[in-house]
Amino acid sequence: MAPRSSKKALTLCLFQSLAGVLFGWSNSEGSGLFNMDSYQRRFGVCDASGVCTLGTTRQSAITGLLSVGATIGAVGSGSIADRFGLRLTCLIFIFIYLIGAAIETSAMNTYGQICVARLLTGLGVGATSGLVPVFQAEAAPPRFRGLVTGSFQLCVTLGIWGVAMTNWGMSSYAGDVSWRVPVGLQMAWAVLLLVGFVLSPESPRFLAKKGKWDHCRKNLANLRGLPMDHPDIETEMEEVRAATIKDQEQGDARYLECFSTKDRILWRTMIGIFVQIGQQITGINFFFSYGVQFAQTAGIDNSYIFQIILASVNVLFSFPGILAVDRAGRRPVLLIGGALMFTGQIVVGSVSKAYPDDKIAGDVLIAFTCLFVASFASSWGPVAWVVCGETFPIRLSSLCVTLGTGANWLFNLIIAFAAPQIQAIIGTGITFVWAGCLALSFTFAYFCIPETKGMSIEEVDALYLSHTPAWKSGSFKESQASSQKLAYEKAYARSTHREGQEGKSSQQTSARTSAEGAMV
Image 1 (tube, rainbow, N blue to C red):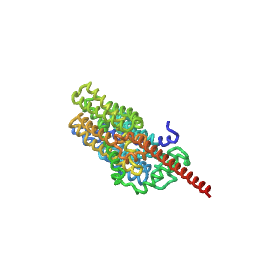
Image 2: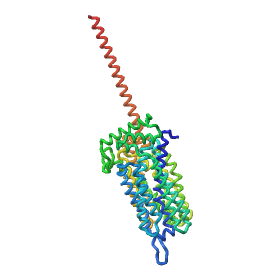
Image 3: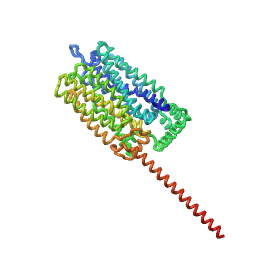
Image 4: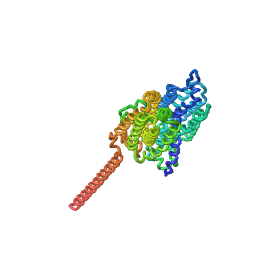
């Protein structure tokens, strides 16, 4: 059980993970909507016989505009949060999200209205998905940081599962209610997230940066659930004060500094960006954005049930991933997960090409697609957010993390536009493309991502500054502890030796004085 001083921070951080529900819901709702007759009539193109379809270009635009807005929101929110604070910035962008969701729900026949709405919801979901992990990395106790930051991805999976279930439930209805309910429900999650941020205190480190020390102490005590004069609060305040003074000596943080070679910031920014890109190029969002269409291409009869199966596996296997990240560590989870995902994609592509329209082959395809989704949910899904949230020094974290999140959404955008076109050409062979990308992600994780399990942000800084190779980083914390112990023992030995020398010298002086007195 978490100690009393951790419960308040854990509760607030986990509540803020509802931003992940917005992420998953908004990003996956189109997969079911695109096949609904009412949605196609309102926003598709109808021929002379009255048959309406939503072409791949419009599907890509509706899916992709969310990613356009999210990329802008993720990158732009970092500098806004640096000026106005994490809490206020998140509140502003959640309100923007609510406006976009309301416009989308009320759309009648104008395809352009849907596009504007998706752009606005993208701004909101991009900003919150970038800033929430930053707040969680700052507020959560180090030993729970993997759990807390990983819970964001769990909420993403819950959003995907929720919209898959809603789309399936509403697919049997003929009227506009079939698509307005799934679209409108996203506002409920946004309102809950808004309430969560209203109840949350501002980041203590942001207040310290602004010189509001009394407010900083109050918020820190609020997060820890302790009195303001508690010794633990005083100790943490000293750490915050020391870090703030060091940051102020370096001046205001700017995006340009994220690409500085000093303190290996450029290297760390690249890790944050590429781990987020790696999460996207696994192909996971293809299956949740266009899973219904993929199932139809593969010859699976009930495409909505296929989507629900994948979404349920995604939720179920998020739990072992969240637990494993703080027990097994970041690197083993990423590497094992990457290998299993690669296997799943290769088998799915091979079976679907070798035995098209075969029932047994279809069952095998579903099984190995589930293996792929389960492996993602318990590895790259949560761990990419953990790595991105803890890689940077506090001073630059909001800027660097939003760059990583922006890269995530940028590749989401590229996949949203390109994947339907690629699938139209090579069909289920698109899984071989994802397999190739997974091989690259595995190589990147092995050579570039260090082990940071159980480390404080300051210890992560020390790890990067030590230039320890990623594949040797697992022993860094122990070697640091051994070095500190050895340094202490040497210092103690020198001190003891010095005291012995001083005692011996004193005895010699005393002896000389006694001898001189006897001679007199």
